[in-house]
Length: 138
Image (cartoon, rainbow, N blue to C red):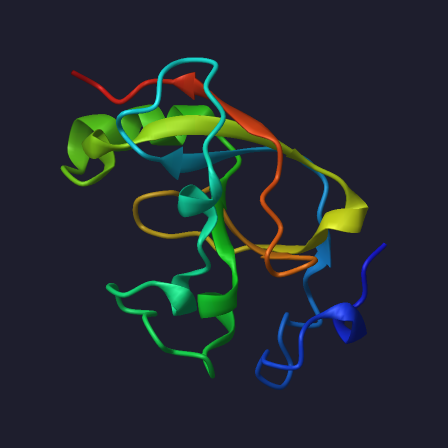
């Protein structure tokens, strides 16, 4: 099991939160629209939010959730969001299976995804094995 001391020093104090648990289980990740069923998303689909050029977390190194990847536990929540949220329609969905050695995770529900989780990977640069299970809607 990974512990918070194994994270890079760049994480803000108290990150990941003490309530985060060892990662484990099957989750879904929104990935690039052009990926086909069975294709493995690459490193570009696993850039931590604080390292991106755009978005609310761009450059926000002192915000804990900006050091975590967004994952969804329930594929039906993604399917519903495809119908209701325009930006989600532009994404394919990959399944990723996590185990305790891969970091810490915490349920972090959102209005769009009630089964949303934040995942702080160990190491921070980890690109997990995963594959597209549903393509972006046409």
